[in-house]
Amino acid sequence: MECKQEQNMKFCNCSYTGCSRKGVCCECLRYHLKSKQLPACCFPDESERTYDRSFKAFAKAWNF
Image (cartoon, rainbow, N blue to C red; front, side):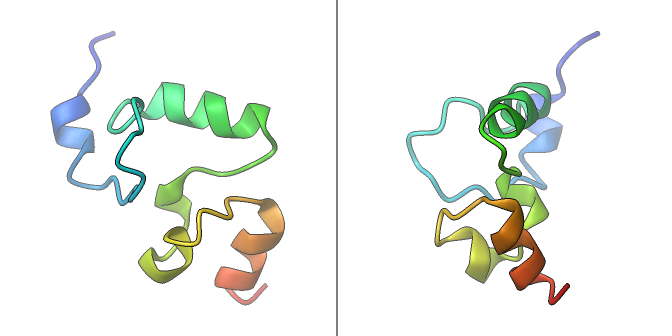
């Protein structure tokens, strides 16, 4: 399966400039889930910029 990194970048709101996984969703998801986190694209922009990618931060961002 071919990675559609360029197309994925249209939806990637990751603000971490040094991220090597930008647009490579499968690697990003694997990386964050391994750390019990969610990727940036799961968060609203203002919450994403805090770099707190925890499940608790996700629930707070979306008022769960």
